[in-house]
Length: 277
Image 1 (tube, one colour):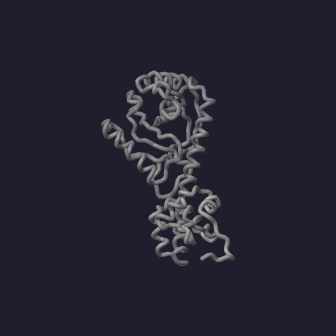
Image 2 (image 1 turned 90 degrees about the vertical axis):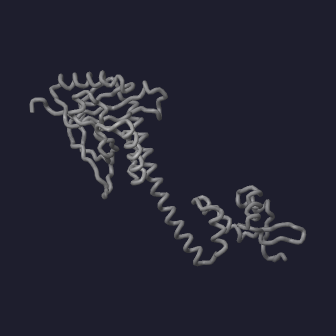
Image 3 (image 1 turned 30 degrees about the vertical axis):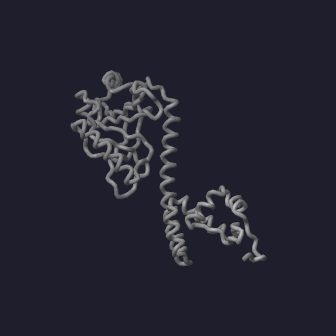
C-alpha cells in the first residue's frame, strides 16, 4: 500500500534519477539486488528516493571492482557494522588504487619528457656530457648467456619491476663491461637496468658514478652497430679520452613510435676517462 506522504517513482523516473537505462534496474530487480519498494496490484513497480543511496553504493562498489555476486552477499547480511566494515575495506582499496595511479602518472610524465627531449636531438651529433650519479635497478648478471637464457632474463626482470613497483617509465637499458665493448661484443650486456630517480629502501641498487660520458646515437638494427661504435671510438680518441668501466645503451625510439626496426634509435653512453691518467 502506498504511503501518501512519500514520493514514489516509476521505473523510468527512477532510472532517469540514477542516470541509467530501465533495463539496468529491471536486471537488478531480477537478481534481487535492488527491487522496487512497492509493487501494486496492477503490476506497477515504484521506487523511493531512499533507495537512491543503495543504488549509489552498488555503483560505487562496482566501480571499485566488486562483483554483483559480492554485492549480493553483502546485502544478504547487511547491517550498520557490516556496512562500516565494507566501507573500511573499500577505503583501503581506493588508497591502493591511488598509489598505483600515482605510479602510472609518474611513468607517463617520464615518457612525455623523454619524447619531448628526443624531438630536439640531432642524432648525428656526438657529444661529451657530464652525468650526475644515477641509481639503477639491475637484472641478474646476463653476460655470456644463451639466447634462451637472455629471453628468460628479460621476462624475469620485467616481472620484478612490476611486482616491486619499480617501473619508473624510463627505458630498460643494457650495460656492457669495458672488456666486452673493446672486444667488439657490444650487446653482450652484463645487466639490464632501469633508472630509479627516487629509490626506495629495501631494494638492491647499482650506483652509476658521476662523470663524463661520450654520447652518441645509433639508428638502425644491431647489424650496423659496429659502424656507430667505430665513430664513437674515433671521437673519443681524438678528444684524448679512453673507455671507462661501462657502456650504457637504451632506446630513444623503438616499436612504440616506429614501425620499422631500421628506424629505431638507440642512445649510447660511454663512460670515459682522460687518456693521460
